[in-house]
Length: 241
Image (tube, rainbow, N blue to C red; front, side):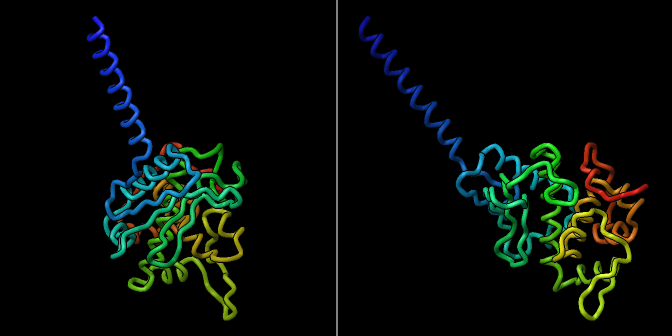
């Protein structure tokens, strides 16, 4: 009887230890993108569930893009993604023009429930749709950063939607599709391009109806059309139909 109890106790201990090991290993397992050329770095203080949702949203955003755009985003260096917590900063996503830094996603910006003239497009915290939108916006930046020297897409975009005076002042031929670029005094054209890039995927009908110059440029760039995304972030669009 005692021998059976010892065996039972030993077996129970092994099961508990094995379960603990599996759970711990699962918790500590690295979060990877489905794309092997996307390299994910996770900094301290991030939330594992949030981090997984950001990478899932990024993967879905890449899934929606045509292959020639994905190829430009990938380039020879792949794409570095860093998940971080910058609670003193407003931004939820930030792309860098160099070929190594890539994109940062901020899981806990300083404020939520921003008005429409601020970033990010948070309505009620971080919904999955909002992560998807931010991921598209930042991928738009990366595309224009990495394609600029070869195809001059960004210079073409500038000439399509605006003119510049000798002192660099922008005169819009068609205002940006959201208030956000207008509220930022720097990089207005870059933000307008990234916003139109994201909106062409999630809200093409409204973009086409209200901002035909932006829409037609993106239609040529993507070489395809999208259908309106259910529950997309249309409140971000500055459109008076």
